[in-house]
Image (cartoon, rainbow, N blue to C red; front, side, top):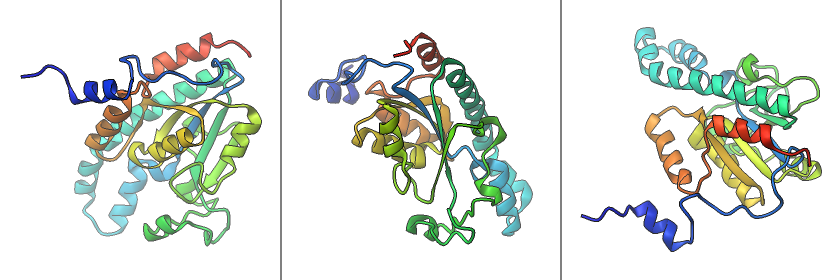
Length: 237
């Protein structure tokens, strides 16, 4: 039986080395690197989902049991995201916060996909609130969206270009939905993006694993420890 994996074949076929993709563009610096925090807000938490499910009539004990694994993984990823944010602030890497929230008080500007999910979140609603562990500080950029991608329906691309950003590190929730969508859009918009693997998760562990397997083969899912070390070593310009 062959010891060569399909991932190795795909990498060889498309010229990808075992170290991942070859960076294109300027060398990374503190001026051209940013941390993008995706949907680190109340609606992403297991507790928020539990309350809504119980209010909808599901048995509380069963709801909490069903959410237990997600809650554990979410809290671990949130803790790592908090450390990443602290490191970004310490080393002068600009954090950019993105959340699901409408612009209007009645949420009538909500996008079609979120409408079908009944995801109506006015700016001051409970679900739209940033979690205190990773809430924006004064002077930090915070954008709102009513769609999956942070690039769709926001000024994110224009903001990043005005700032001279080339490298993006993504963290937040959930991995296979808003995080991966923003990641793909970032690549398509010309940014060298990476998903920090231990600073994100999603509802089903196997879906998280699928995203990590897919992009890890290209070297685009670094661990937070390595990203923080990189932040610390980056030159000013």
